[in-house]
Length: 144
Ligand SMILES: [Zn+2]
Picture 1 (cartoon, rainbow, N blue to C red):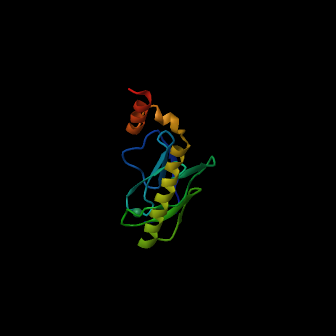
Picture 2: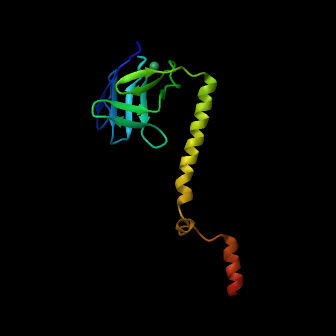
Picture 3: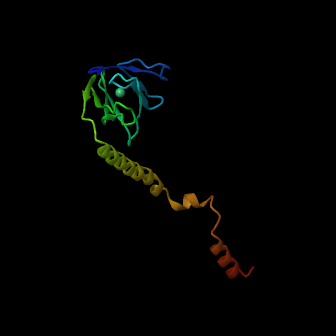
């Protein structure tokens, strides 16, 4: 049965068996876990990162953003966990799921490229052998 409310538990590590209706939050692992709120028993792990989920704890309830789409489960549940309430959202069509995934990939690609571009090239160059062309040029110039 679909649930409309949930509680939360801050844990170090996730228990072997997750309890239904509980959102487990492990700050240590930067991940939250719960059983799909449709009741299908599917385990849902949501990782916290700037490109994945973020959590808000207001002292009483935990909210997750963005919505959780269990597209890989047969139930294809889609809901938002907000202030202890499960807000059920529309099921997405296969097409929309694919579009969402593609968007997500693009967003992640951009994010992953960010830090690489920000790294100065000369820092990376320390470990790199000089290109063969450069060695040849240097040999020619130095006459060795
Ligand atoms: Zn489900």
